[in-house]
Each structure stands twice: as C-alpha cells, then as structure tokens.
Length: 172
Image 1 (tube, one colour):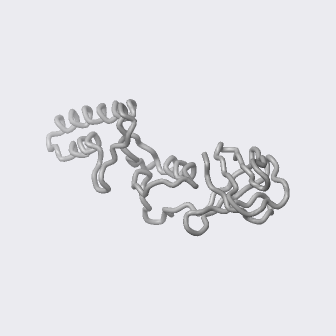
Image 2 (spheres, one colour):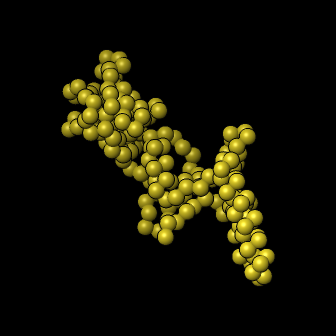
Image 3 (cartoon, rainbow, N blue to C red):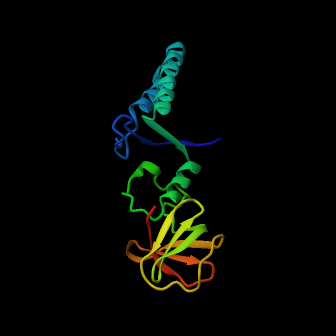
C-alpha cells in the first residue's frame, strides 16, 4: 500500500506559504479525518464524500499539496545545495529514513570557465554549480559523472570524474 503524506499547504492566491505548525494539519484534511468519528454509517459516508470532494478540490486548485514519499525525496534532492529553512514541509525523518542528503550524483551537461580558473557547471538536471575556490585540475567535459557532497559550515565539494574536489556553491 502506497503511503501518502500531506506535504504542505500553500496559499494559491498570494503565492506565499501558509505552513501549519508541526503537529497541525490542513483544515480540509482534519475534516476528512473527523468523519471517522461519525457513528451513523449514512452520515459517515456523506461526511466522507463531502470531505473527499473538498480535499480533491483543494489539491486541484493548489491550496493543498500532497506528495508521496518518492516525490518528497526527489524534491529534497532537487533542493540540495540551496539554503532552505528547516521546515517539516518535505516530511521529517521517519523511522528508518535518512533526513539529510549528504551527496548527489550528477552528469555534467556543460562546463565553462567563467573567469581565469573559475568554472561553472550545468548538470543534466538543470542545476548550476559555480566554483568558489581552488583550481580545477584538467578540463571537465559534458557527459562526465560528478558528485557534490556536503562539506563543513554549509559549503559543498564537487568531484568531476576522477579530479580532486573543488569547493562550489549552488546557483540554480
């Protein structure tokens, strides 16, 4: 059985987040859960029908976003390297699940020297990493494997192929 999690509640009109506290749910989901308490089967079914319709409508309009575990993990991976506040919107660590991604593997789409000795890497997934110190050994090429890993104090190291690591920051 596939497990689904409410990932976050977003305000569709303003575009700004309206995040619930860690232990709160979106009201539309609370209404659906409350239907279980209805002892009369006919009223319980009517409650579920109305609540399910409201949840479906909220999801379709973007007021509620529901992601499964695989989608949450892919979202975490796509945000790797960005400074994102510590929110439970992408699901906190559950038993047997790692919370922090320590490294991400990429394939280099392109690499160009922006300034003398400073490289910009565009990865196949569209992410862009810029070298911020050190010196690139060799000339990186499209199609080469690359790994970005966390380093100290919020920084990141990039290895392209077998080249020594360079310090990078995520730009996009």
